[in-house]
Length: 335
Image (cartoon, rainbow, N blue to C red; front, top):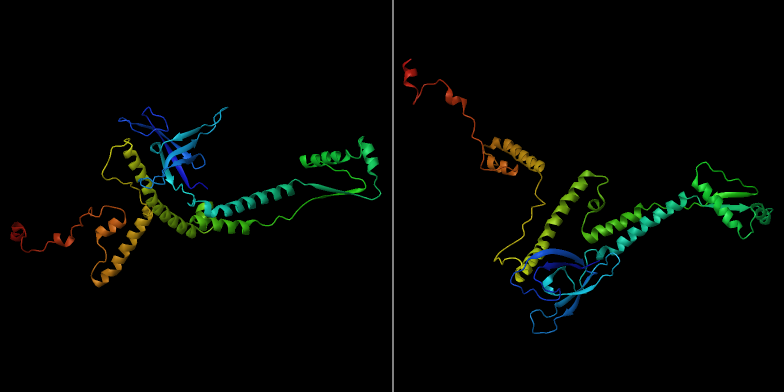
C-alpha cells in the first residue's frame, strides 16, 4: 500500500546522516532502497516565505533489525535521500484501489484450500446404538469415560495415516464428515477482473494465458503500450534524481539530459516482414493502373532494413541483343 519509497544516498563526505552534503569532493558509494514503512518525514519547513515551504527538512529512517540487534532510528537530511512517489497523506497508492479485491482473492484461495483439506482428512463421526454402554467400552480400554474421547481420536488418526487400516466397530456406525465445496472459479474471476480494472493490467497478463492466443496477443500489445506510457512518467522521476545528484555535486552539472527508452510498441521482426509482404502485394495489384503505391525503399524500411540500401536492378536482356543501331560495334557492322 506504500504511496512512495526512498533511496538512501551513501555519499562519501565524512558527514553524519543528518548533515547536508557540503563537501567539495563527493562520491556516491551506494544506494539503499527504503520503503514507506521505514522512511517517514520527521520535520517540515514551516516558513511561508521559504521556497521549500511544506517540504520535509528531515527524514526519519528505521533500520532493519540485524541478527540479535534491534533496528535504530536515524535522522536523515533531505540531501541524502531521494523520494520516489508522493509522500503526502492524500496520495493514492498504486495497489490501493485493488486492495479489497486482493483480500477477497486471498480468502477465496485460502477458503477453498482449507475446504479441500478438511474433506481429504476424512474426519469421522461415530454414532453408537442406544444399547451400547460407554462404561463397558472405557473399561475395555482401561480408561475412564472422560478419557475415552482421546482413544477414539487415536483410532481416527491411525485410520487417516494409513491406506490399509481397518476400523472395527460393534454397535456403532462411522461416517466421514464431508462438506460440499463450491466452485471458486466465478468468485475468483470477478475479483481478478476487479484487480485488472484497478491496475489497468489485463488479467491474462497477471495470471498468464489460459485460452485464446489471439486475445492474449492483443492483451500483450495493450500492456506494452501501457508500459510505454508509464515510462514517460518514470522519466520525470529519473530526471529529478539526476537533478538532485547534480545539486549536491555527485554528478557534474549538465544543461540538458534525458532518459532514453527502447520502444515496446515497435513491431517484431516477423511483424515487420509481414507488413513488407502486404506492401509488396499492394504494389503488385496497383501495377495494373501503371503506378506503384510504395517504393522499394519504403518496403525495405517497413521490413526493418536500411531504405537507402536498395540493390541495383538486373540488366535488361534486350540491351544485349544483336540488333544494329547507333553505337554498335563498327567491326560487327562491317561483318
